Length: 296
Image 1 (cartoon, rainbow, N blue to C red):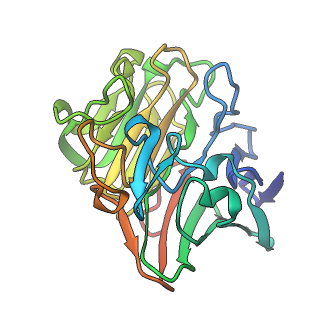
Image 2: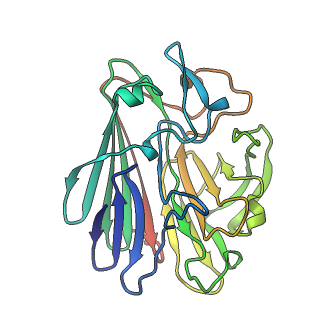
C-alpha cells in the first residue's frame, strides 16, 4: 500500500489494480470510500480495462480469434508497479505480458496516476499503444463511495446531484449483465433521490447525460463528495441489488457492456476506443471533497 497526504486529505492506493482504497478527511476522520468488505463487494475503486461491463457469454472476437474475458476486464485483478512517487503524486503502470496475451491480443502500457491538490484527488489514465497495429479497448472507473457519508444517516437520506439539468432514460441490463435496447425514464432535473429499490434491476446506465459532475448529498447534513469527469460519454450508477450496502458507485466510462444481441468483433463495439500504433489516449477524473470549486 502507498499513501499520499496533505493538510486536508489522506489517500491509500494498492498495487493490485492500482486501486484507490481510501480517501480520508483528516479534520474528523471521515472516510469517503468503501473499504472492500466482501460481504457486499470485494473492491473499493477498480479501473475497468480493457473492457467495461460484460461481453456476451464472457467471450469476444478480435484479430480473428476468440477470447474469454470476465466482466470489467483484467486490470482490476492484476498487480501494477510504482513508477514514480512525489510528495503529492503516485504513478503506477501495467504492461502487456504473457498472461494478458491469453485474454487480450494487443500490446499496451497502462499508467494510472493519483495527485492530491487541496480537497481534490485527481486520477489520470494513460493508455499507450506499443503494438505495431491499431488496438481497441474501453476504460472506466468504478469507485464505491460511502453512502451515507455520515454513518448516523441512511441511504434513503441521500440523493445524487447533477451539475446540469437532465431529462434522461436509463438503459436496462439483462439478467446476463448485457444491455437491452429498452429505455426507462429515470432522470428529470438535477436530483435523483436514492433508494435501494432503484437498483433492483442492477446498475443504472446512461449514454446521454449533460452533466460532468455528480455529487452524493444528504438532506440531513452538509458533507458531500463529487465525481468530476469531463468528456466521458457513458455513466453508470450501482449498489448491490440485495440492498443495504453502505455505498454507491458513480462510474464514468469510455465504453460499456455488450448489447444483448451484439455479435461483432471488439473493434465494432459501440463506444470502443481505437488507438493507432505509437499513439496515447489520456483522460482524467477527480474526487472533490466538500463543495466543488468550479475554478479548479
